[in-house]
Image (cartoon, rainbow, N blue to C red):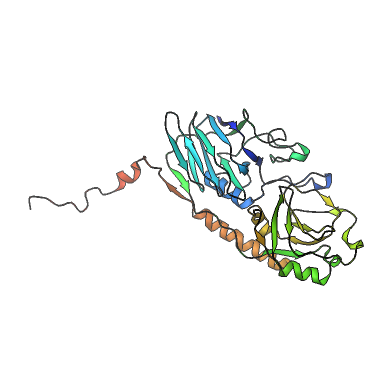
Length: 344
């Protein structure tokens, strides 16, 4: 039997996303998918889902939800807070990076994200209809998610019902992205820029501006000069998430998950795939630095990150919420060890 969650308030800036919609860029369809795949994979791992299962991506004010049919398990990852109100009970805090099991009628209120991106995973994943092989919402084409739009009051999010009520929950330490400069591979149009521009990109900080969304992130910093006026434009060619376009004003734009499939601005560099999740946690005013690597080094960085993520998964641990008794541990324990007779 399936479970579902009813949306009481969709919040602001939240969408259903999964691992994305590859294979359609030649048709002009963006890949979409998680802005921060690692935070999403963490949320899915906590509830026992495959890493690419559809989650609710939270970018602004979180939603208010009510369980229509349970029980189900959920998990939150990101920099945010939430509260649960069980039937006939008072609000209880749900700490991010942990799970909670909810029954029919229980309500969840998710607060605003304190910068970056957060994820809400439901047991079994959010089972809305798949379009072009993905459940990811792509607003510009009105596909995926809930008929191509954001969740709103009255919507239902189907998921998997737990086979039996389990009182044990799961938690993990918050995932932390690697620090330091973002790693990039120069090109494919690095020759359209002056040597000074390349030195600026790799030697100076650039600031994330408020003009950023799921399509791209505009940066502000030292002007990246093209070799000539003609070099500032190219015949439109393929672009990909992570590409750093530089229009005529010399201010770079990093393309993100919902980016277009072709573009006419030269691309000075491309953020490597291992570092793309870090972009999902950038906030306006944050300073970014870049470091150039080759293909071999980028593969090493990705392998090291995946090993660290697997270690994080291995660190997920069960716990009992306050008010529940671990009967198994009680039966196995020696309850009289250390006792003495008072008459001796």
